[in-house]
Image (cartoon, rainbow, N blue to C red; front, side, top):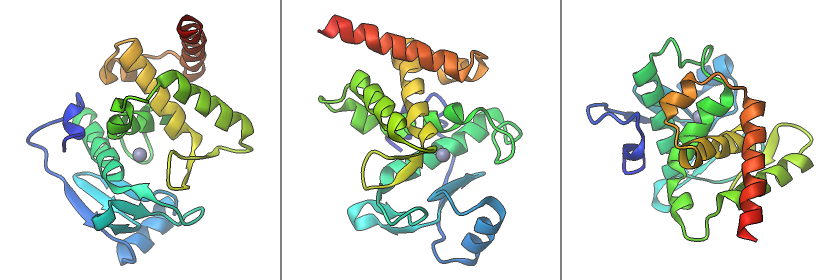
Length: 204
Ligand SMILES: [Zn+2]
């Protein structure tokens, strides 16, 4: 809740169900219908955790590509933001079949849920962008290594988070403005890289 409250989509009346469905019939059905990828899903008011978790150490354990670990708080906050996206903009605009481009859909929940990381004093957006560029240049497909715990993620989670962070923290746009903006992903990405290069010059 502390993370999600920072979002412009936050609604104090909104209630979430957190449903643990590892090894359940629901999981089997969901895998059939929507594929086995994600560790969790957001459906209406429900945050559905599909993988094994251990709350005592705040971790979830995806096994889709290989066994790995993700921070459970981030995972839940990410899905709560998906609930709030559909709550604010309507299920017609945010559903598995129709939604904004992936970088806008996934970048924003990543941006909000990773606030603790961004607040740490050694965090640096320029360095994060360089880390992404480096990871992407070595990748042979969309899968790249995530932040921690050895999980591989599709590149648009990390790329989208950086682009949202650039647009919100550097350009001071709201998420609402970003959703309404029709400028292409590649234009914004290139602009962010240019900003990173010039900001680096100033730092040196
Ligand atoms: Zn997501």
